[in-house]
Image (cartoon, rainbow, N blue to C red; front, side, top):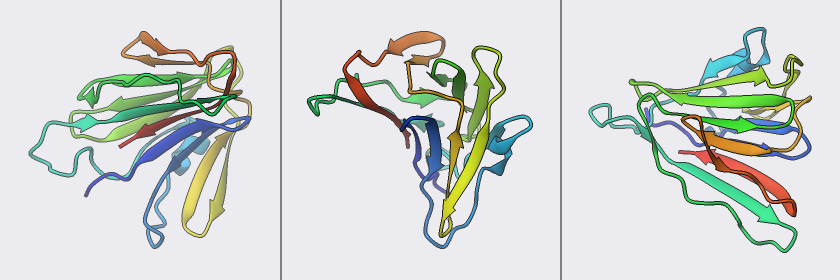
Length: 158
């Protein structure tokens, strides 16, 4: 089954959501703890014979409404992206089966405080003690830091 897009964004706190069909009802409740990691639903891409790959799209809106984010390469098997705030980190790994594993961990010693909110069958996870996104790294290499006039940052995986 094809994976549904995953969105990690900042809106005062870091938020994580996998966009699922309205009738789906699956979730990633292991993000709530104690280990704070879970597999997203589906495979990237749907074709099980194809090499695993996942597009990483970064959107960063500045105070003038301009997108200032760079284009990033696709994730392949074994690649990972890290989305950092001042206190928390969300790591996204693509494994050889094409599954995405999300992990939340502390940057500065504070354990993640994660809560879930739900509307219908759609659930999102909020890392309450994470601030706005401060950097994005691909395989350990810094690829983006939001500029000082940034008002919103989003990472979409599909």
